Image (cartoon, rainbow, N blue to C red; front, side):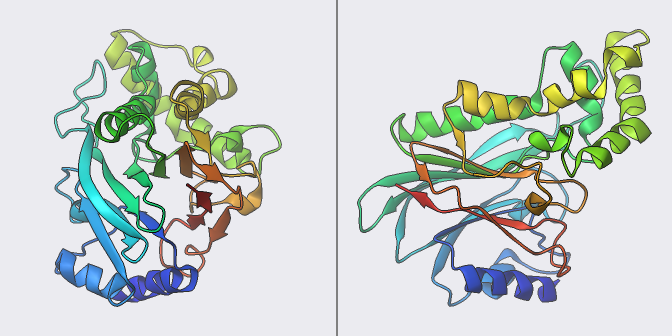
Length: 298
C-alpha cells in the first residue's frame, strides 16, 4: 500500500495542485490516518480535512479528503454532507445503499481575500450499485441527482449564494461516453446487456410487485438519460458548469479502469481555463482511476 502512496505522492509533487481532492483512499488494515497522511503529504506544505462515509469498511475514514496549500489558502470551516446512510434502502426493496458522503471546506485565498467552497465526493453507482436504476425510476428517484442537490444546497446554506464553489469527485457515471461514436459506448452497452439489465429488472420487479419488460428499459431510451441526469441537474438546475473543455467521449479522457470518464469537476462562479489534463495512475498500478487536473480562476 505504501508503494502506491509513494506513487501518488510523486504525482502531487510533480503537479503541485493548490487544491487536491481524493476519494476512497484506503487506510489499510493496520495503519492510522496520521501514518497515511504523513507518507502522502509530509513536508509538501498541505493541510487537509477528511470525512468518513459511515461505512464499516477499512477505507471509510478517508473516503473523501480535501488538501490545500497552506501558503495559498486558509481554512474557514469544514463539514460533512451525508448523502446516503447505512439504513437507506433502494425504493420499494430491502436492499440497502452503500453509505456515501461529501467532504466540504470553505477556504480563503490569502493573497486575494476571496473565499472558495470545495466539495470532494463519491456519488452512488458503479459496478456494484447500478442495479438500482429501475427501482429508483419507478419511485421517481435518482440518487445521484439527489446527492448533487444536497451538496449544492449545503454549500449555499453554509457559505452563501455568492461564494464560488467546486464539486469534484467520482460521479460513477459518464456523460457523452455512452453515445454513438464514443470510445466507451461499446463496453458500456456490453455491461448493460450482459448482466446489469437483468439484475436491475429483478430488483425493480420487487419494488413494483410485478414483472417488468426489458423493452421499457432500453439502453439509449432509458438507461443513458437516467444515468446522466446528475449532469443535467448540476448544469441546468443548480447553476454549475463542467470544468472540462473536451468531450468525455474521447479515448484520452479515460479516468477509470472499467469505463471512460466518471471523475468530474463542476464549478460555479469560477472561471475555468478548460485545460483539463488526465494524469496517469492506472497504468502505473497506483489506482483504478486516473487523476484529473484543471485550472480555475477566482
